Length: 243
Image 1: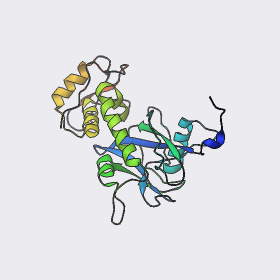
Image 2 (image 1 turned 90 degrees about the horizontal axis):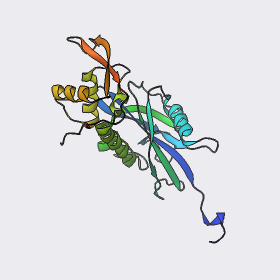
Image 3 (image 1 turned 30 degrees about the horizontal axis):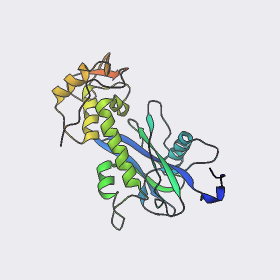
Image 4 (image 1 turned 30 degrees about the vertical axis):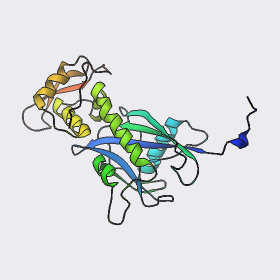
């Protein structure tokens, strides 16, 4: 093996990009920021940025989320690494490798732009993936390769709620079966039969635990409240309907 020669390897940077998903007004929404600086100035993008030399990836992800949007990591939020993206042409400035993260949480507040972002908003994923948040005179795609990253994050969320209890990450600490059903409907983009759904989720061992309380916040008769159980994998799984 030949001696290591640093000059043989061009410099490159590492970034973090964040796919932040929540359910708002019965729709699966993602966090998008409008870039305030080149490249892709004025285009919508996922929040993120360069990793500093003194921080690890999770620290960089939390910092960028706070700097660009005003949002901070909350107790109960689900955070996981999504994938690594390293196409040599993905960033026109230099060779950049991005480690994308997926964040799922309920009831996230309206974002406030900061850092090098000049705007921030929640938008339905169908809008971002179909039109890139298009407004008159705007490009129809997100900046960089963020269309692909967002699509990968959405598919990760859609597939994981089939076989895991991850859907409860979109719910408050105590929730009704109807509220959980609307999470599945928003993430999958389908309508589910209420009776069949209730039977499946309450019959899956370890998925839900009754709290003993009820609520009328959805209107109508009092509905039983549940919290997430200890199961992380669902058996049998909640299979996604074919559309």
